[in-house]
Length: 86
Image (cartoon, rainbow, N blue to C red; front, side, top):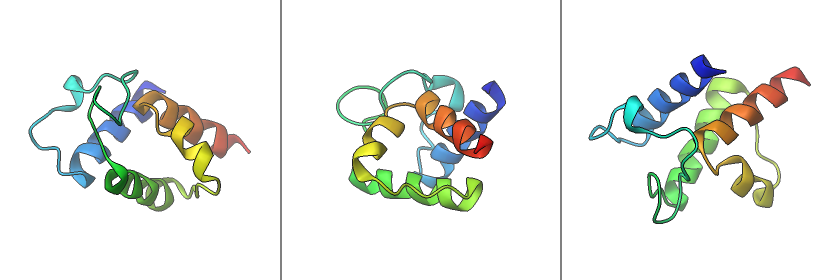
């Protein structure tokens, strides 16, 4: 799980052009959106959806489900792990 979290952090930094921070500075539990954590926006959410589709073959079907999945790096990792077990 920790390897997946680290990989996700690196993908987020690369895809979202977050060069000013390192993967060590991203708290796995911190919110990704809003005023806390990384402060991502809806455009960033679309990029994360693309990362999941491209890298993990996962499609987010239900938008309301996406809010829970995209809460933090750890919740994304949990979702990827659960989806790959199906």
